[in-house]
Image (tube, rainbow, N blue to C red; front, side, top):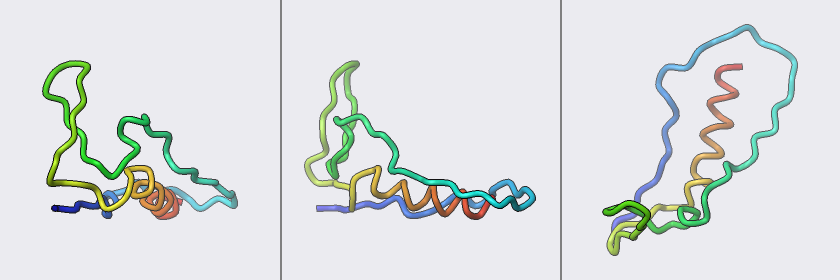
Amino acid sequence: MRVAVIDQTPVVTPEQSRRDATLLVLPPAINPIYDTIRMAYQAQPHQIDYFSKHEWGATPAQMLQPLLAHTFERTQ
């Protein structure tokens, strides 16, 4: 079984002046079809299948939420 993760933020992010604010970053809303560690693909319109030997290390929302928070923090 091959396991993949999404663990990198954008290399270049815009920078702005710092503001005193708090931003709550919730996990992204993911379509239930993709809210799994199974890697999905689409061979035909309106038909989703899953790879048999590949999977994500966590659900997409679990991998993306910390990256979003880190990117927002870096861009101030």
